[in-house]
Image (cartoon, rainbow, N blue to C red; front, top):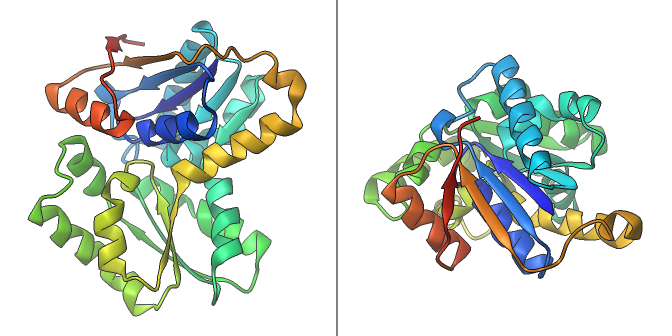
Length: 261
């Protein structure tokens, strides 16, 4: 089983990408709705939540862990790798690698939660691979709540996205990393507001491709994963709006099981 966790609904974009790129693999998902968003929590709290989420997924039979949360990936990856013997995947490195492979002028923008942006993790990883790259980041704290509320096509959302992206447009970026797995749900608006000359990097698809490549190169680990085309979805809280948006993301009706950690 592939275990995937996120602070909320955004991680379902990773689930959908994994379903598309690794068809047949069994998936167990945990969305920590009761404690979302992680982006305004302290690093210590995010690390503790990530450990609890990982332990829960392992108890459900997960053999690899996917951190479908940029905030958790930015502050909790090393702590999880120290405490967990299973393969751990985070969403940041694959997005950085892809961004550097497609950028034309090495002027890259990043949007994410406050915690992700303040960690500086994207800039560090980009500069490590390409010291000459220019990186401009913008925290977008309102976007996660808007996605969680299902405000994906509201004029207020378009206005807020435009305001957040304006500083990056003035820097003439040619590549934009969506540094939160909630943001692909707003990708049409973001792509329109940032302009057609900017390549938008969706971290949900880049991490799914990374998992696929890893399993192709690791047949022993691939053999431990069940492939019955099943997906189980757990959440720490549930709302009608979450149920509606979740089904739209996965593109099929899903049953959400509530569990408190």
